[in-house]
Length: 401
Image (cartoon, rainbow, N blue to C red; front, side, top):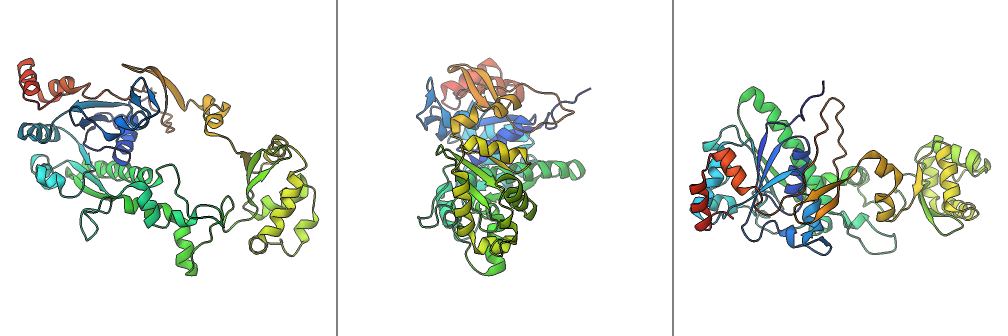
């Protein structure tokens, strides 16, 4: 018999917005946690207004990071609103926020205050540069961190300018670190009964993204070269054009891959013995000479011919697709990574699904991203036992919406 999702029974009070915090809590919601998203009445998460495109007024940006959540609208500038946050935190397992450092302390909803109310609370703060130090109060967004932490410097064409990645890689990496840290803190709480304060920064997320690129510098003392579609340490890896002008990407990163490519696929076995290309180190040093040879060979047949030949030989290669081609590809459709959900105002909308699959866990249906304040009454009734009169008074006072 299959089990309930592993985070079933965990309640998360989510005061975050934009990407890093919301993507973290969405992942935890996908795994069964109850996520209560606290938003500002009449405004909500800033991504609600980041359009076009939109689906009947629902911004694509908000739809991307907020499935499986409940939205409540509370005015945290009011004393009563902050008291509601205290009451909800007392009955939650996790609280997450990404205000600028100092804001939650001013509001009286910082970790020290929450710990007095709920010693078992796992509290995660996400900021641009961390909670302390000279940089703490600086504003920062993903593209700025891509620039500052060297990510742009290694991205782009060799002769071009440093290039920011369109996807918010720093935000997304930080969200993964946050969900991992929160899960780990919840596991330890089972033994100790105590919560934890987690301090994560976009700077740290950007730094973690550097991976082997950082080690390249730490090992050599030199900046890695900007290689565009190629790989700085493995050849032949890169994008090539077929005779039809369509591109494919091939990654032959091992000696075995290279030998199979030149002997079995392009049928030029003499390239194995060519001293310029004998080892990967040789190929890196003579990169352009080899790439020129391969480009001429690949220009003799259409892209799909080469993709089929290379894949049939067990080597990694695939077509360079547009986003729409990728989203509608058979492998994406057949994997169940896309779904159609009925949204209260947008109607039937297509959304992504979590790629995490747990074999012994129930396949829980997803819920669409909520409307602003859609669950305010439901949450306050279910969690805080608020009655109709209390809700009416809070609403008339402008505390909730």
